[in-house]
Length: 194
Ligand code: UDP
Image 1: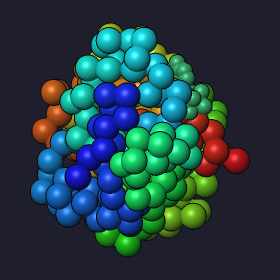
Image 2: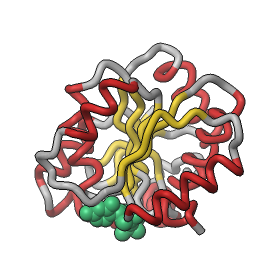
Image 3: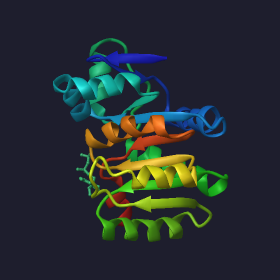
Image 4: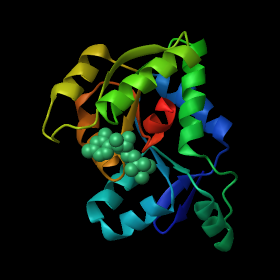
């Protein structure tokens, strides 16, 4: 099921299978998850940063984001099936949320960028349920956001703080919630803002 590259275990599934698993095994079951969309930069960061590496080891799903990871898997003669770009995985989850009762929460990006992205989301996915959102310029010990997530109980939490901060923030806060698929999405909210 997983293929390990430089001690980072990647899930060997097509993007569509990852989406279905997230929906049926985590979201519908109200389970928690840390999802990492790992590109070569993330894999290299894990080699230098023990704490970050340990967090990746606890991730529920790590998808290969970037052709470099796929090439590395082929060189090892354990090829991964398909590249799973983080932005596309996020888009597929949002599309699923437009058709199904899945609530989302967004953490990250600059305040005005986030507002633009939220407006665009409502236009592109009119049925999407956004439980809340908060910009990404806060102190790590600020509990306001996680308290809002505890209160609004979203199914999917998109965390756009850039790596490694986003995965570290998720790992620190996952024990405080009852459910939720948490996924680091890097600069994706900036892209959504256009
Ligand atoms: N960001 C944030 N808080 C911070 C630093 C960054 O919310 O303290 C946001 C930033 O506004 C951008 C995203 O995190 O939306 C980082 O994007 P980047 O492309 O650098 O991330 P990567 O894809 O490299 O992880």
